[in-house]
Image 1 (cartoon, rainbow, N blue to C red):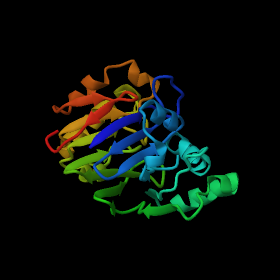
Image 2 (cartoon, rainbow, N blue to C red):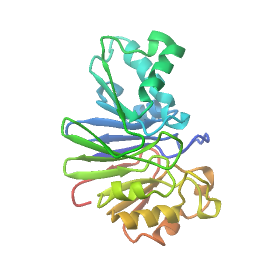
Image 3 (cartoon, rainbow, N blue to C red):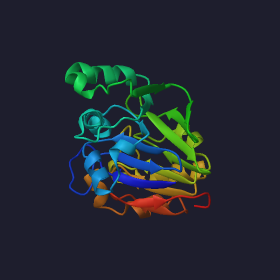
Length: 257
């Protein structure tokens, strides 16, 4: 499994940190998790063809996680000479269908993929849930953020990757991420600037330890996180490998990592 960070930032515009986005490539499925503003540009920089994406996973509906989903739908209908023809699978929390229908009401048929190419699957916003396709299994759990919002665990190629999405410290996420090869965990603010609905570096480290994950990747940084040593703060509670996400960083995961 290969993971590329398409956005390690937030809703605050930053040149080096795009809004939230991940690309996950397993042997059979190419997945995007969240599509904040600028995700498609980062995909171009990483030489990821949007027409080859099999699955889009949305954690919640805040603009820094969904804005480029609109542009993706538009591009999928109207690319010059290279129009996408494959099925577009999209999963997200309850409310996803209403969210999409609202986009169509605003933008019209321009964002409605023709020929029934869009398949929307809603995951429970209140209970554990599971989605499977082509050798990939995605488990979800409600997160502590806006409602609805989900954390995910992606299992493929004998690798387990957990993704917090936006969340405060969460027993659901500890359960979901248990024994994961890697946890990509939000770390929005330094410990001294804790805000409700988000985690700090030391909280991310504590959660990773309680979940017994093998590796921790910190992401979703507001600018103050680049003014402090978030790795040291996280390592005070987690002794395993820790990475600080950077846009266009690529991580190869296998069963031993």
